[in-house]
Length: 252
Image 1: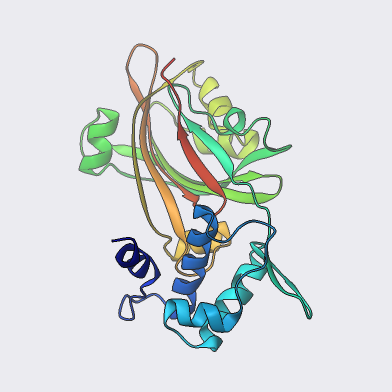
Image 2: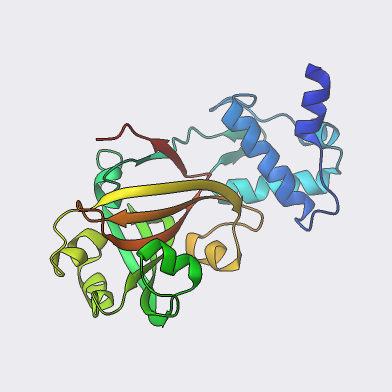
């Protein structure tokens, strides 16, 4: 059974639409995460990796080059390639999920950058989440969370346009959803629900998060409400799995 599971873990989907070198890079990342390739230790030789994953050395070399560029591996002339010690950020998901305080103690500087914003009609999904009529105007914010100068999240958030007119300006000025909501009389809010999933990053997330094709993002779909239960924000956030882990915290 163990041999069968190992073979499955090392298998490559040649018709998956994801390039072979990216799949090999993902397999190496998985092996590092599972402890199969230890941090600060030498990676197996290219030929051994090629045999392990059933590809040629050129494909393995391309995967290793990408991981060196991403800061996961370190190549040393004449010595080989080594796994760097790389601790992922732990982002808590709880009753009061906040970007800045969630990463406090792990990073020195945290900021949310507003990438774009516009007003659009609410889809059924957004309308149900915010408790408004389908087609009602909502303000959509596209943002990127940054920690110590590195992108760690990309999010789409929707707010009822009538109640939060101008929230895009507040967001651009403050760099904080919490601070922006305070300008509209929302001094506190709670996470009503969070749905977690994972997928390959799309083209926009690859660019915004500085990821390689085939990279995995962790996805949270969430509804925030005021203490009396009124919905104020619906959002979908994406976190690069190679940099961030999501931690479910106890309810407050």
